[in-house]
Image 1 (tube, rainbow, N blue to C red):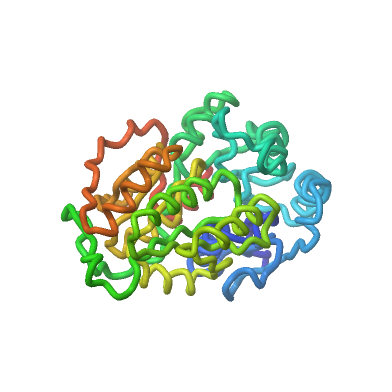
Image 2: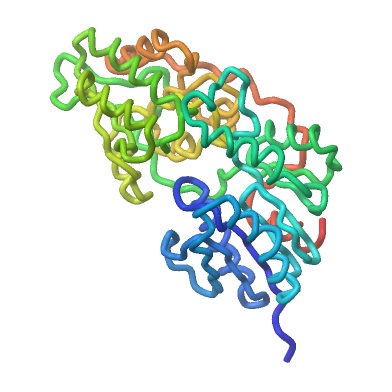
Length: 383
């Protein structure tokens, strides 16, 4: 009996955040739908980062995050050796890079927003490691992108950037937003009705904002701290939950020290697993999302299932994400204007928040994938 054909999923650089969700949901689908006919190999940093998934052959790369040299060695040398040994029918890289491998079909999935960094975002000044990472993505990890049979992006703007910058064939560029495999819950409020809030004078519990974000400079925590200071001066009863704690890096440590001295409304939860995060979503009154760069904005989609108000940076990723899930309970704000955000937060606390009307989605230029079934059907058929 001949061995089953091999599908390889490589994601050795991921260790936290929404990227783990993407990998996990991809492997769940492959386990359920393809493991009877194919051998599924998952190349990951550490297996314990994922919930148990049957019928998957896990290969751990525990040294992948120790240095850039290790990561590049894996991508261009170690993976190449493994591909010659396994001879896969599909190698799908979920980590924004094109490994030097031999496979019948090769594909890469892009979701890191650093490729789209605006010039005014001073990464060198605040988190130089992120600027180095951005340069790696732009000049190293995109190397060999034309060797892929398919290039998949989480959002239209990333797809457009890759298509233009690397002269890709348009029919081989796909957009696959992660809306089809996210946590679902019953809505408890009709957020699209126009106004949501409560009587601030009679409320016992403080009105609660939540911002689930990793400790990157471009997540724009500084704006939220400045807005919190302005809202606090008005004597309103509120609090803000942040999923950082100050141990992540020097930049975030400085912000936490300032907030602990001056802003008692801010509570630092630290990193939360998805189950705990959904528990906090359930208790929160409003999501505030000031991030300056996102590939998708996973918390926006997750929180929308609760039917509660969302305050979102008025940027392309935010409007695209909210439009994709047809969510109308959102008010947009200028992501560099603390005064405007403070005003929106005050309106939410006092029950006066008016939601913005969507201005329509941008014209779709690339083939859209809506679920893993369609995605792998196309990949395994070679398009």
